[in-house]
Image 1 (cartoon, rainbow, N blue to C red):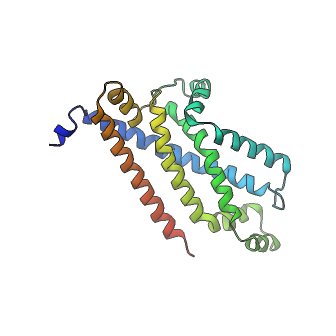
Image 2 (cartoon, rainbow, N blue to C red):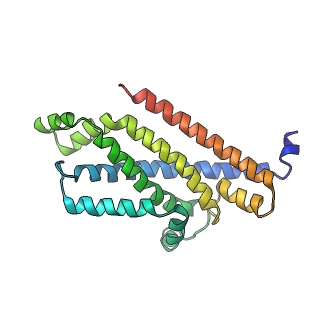
Length: 222
């Protein structure tokens, strides 16, 4: 009965595409978490009345974040084609999708990091500063621990968005479920292939959301 519902689905290709989607999502989420965290902390620390208060650095960093965060992802992929080709050597395949995925998601997550850091009680930061704590100590012992639930919630949202990004990247040959749905499904009028790819993408999203919510809840001590 299952084969009757999805007669045109090549299951080997479907599982390969699923692996590619998961691979792109995991790698880009990991790099996005690190890069976005660094940028978000930099934005926070260079804002007025903070340790590294610097209007120029804060403005330039914030502007870059806003620019890349505002560009539609499909347009960003096209704009980054020369950079991707230089970096990876090709504009097709899973590896070629990673630069656009990371550059597209990192600014978004950086803003979520900034919002999370702004929610920290200022008294906690001031207490650490008055005790002579180094900037590195404040970052690792105050900023990150105090905002950890929000940081994890933010990266969960970002990871879910990245699944959608991988589907869009698939349209230009990046691989994954988006590519399979477009090439084997849409272009060949195989609705069952598109439907199955969609179902698997939804399952991946639900799993990511469940894991993210679970970890966030466990780390929230409030």
